[in-house]
Length: 437
Ligand code: SF4
Image 1 (cartoon, rainbow, N blue to C red):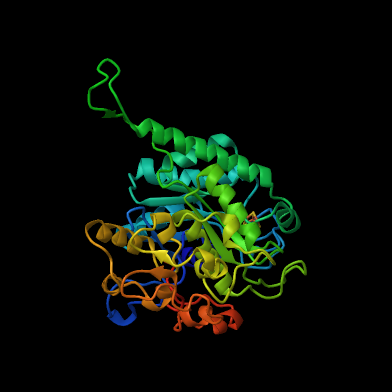
Image 2 (cartoon, helix red, strand yellow; image 1 turned 120 degrees about the vertical axis):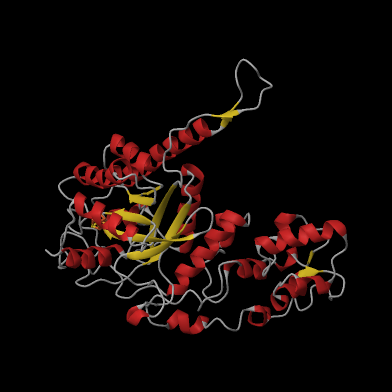
């Protein structure tokens, strides 16, 4: 098969994996000599480096053949799709060619399982080894690992990759057994635990150590064995099984706590051709995926516990308002918050105040008393914040008890109702409110 045809098939097959956070941008290209670069070249996606830089990745599968028959997956053995397989050499050459032409800064490589988990993982690792050892490739490499593969192979993968990920796939064991019976939930967690140990060991070895014979001397940084310096991540499919948002966030909290994952990605289930009747016929509303990302943000940066984000009831996040506003509306007795006295963790609970706004407020109030005018200067969304705060120049808690408070403070520009009922297509990043909640 021609290389370009393989690339088209294996890049398209990789697009269902959201764990490199690539989708969502507007379509642009340089056809006709206008400008330079493209957001939609075959297999090229975007990810974010730890320092916040956006980097382009060649995102492909080694092969879309797979022995397993996970019902939600387009690449499952019973799926009637065109198949292709790259050789190790081809992936290495493609990565180098794209890199030399300045199209990419790294590689995201995943694969269906051929012959056995070990056989497949060996090939995936070999791509990374050759790039690093034979070609001195210094770009970013993200390898999707196969949890059933031998522990030694996972350890080798970490020596060459910046980031490793293992998909947990579904939030509950029951869901995994029903939709991906060949996958082993225990093996997934065991492999995550192994990766965590390797990552922790590498970090510990890299930490500066005092010189033993001279306890007061300046610590020296030891030459460190590097292991997946960008950590590990995972992906959960949303809406393929009966798992509620509470199930999903509980699982995420466990994964962050037990395995120190860098990120959990949420991917709204996409209906596939010839699907099993066990799967829902339609995709969940994309706004559900968005709400889960907002809730995840609250757990990681705003000090919320997973079990306080989803209110009692059906275990689902509101599609109408973001989870932080939903929490505030359900806990009005905790407001208004005094902007001049409240501790950081309470300020972070005020709808409309993001982490950087809170830090700026804390810095400003060290030197003088904050007034209402300061909020506008700090670009805080006044309409959203006002009912929940107390600050000179504003009437404390104005409208806090109003029955229509949610409608008053909800961002008007977000077409939430349309998004809830709308078509199951990926929206532009700019159609939804920003993740800072
Ligand atoms: S193992 Fe992975 S590639 Fe294979 S069918 Fe399951 S989800 Fe798809």
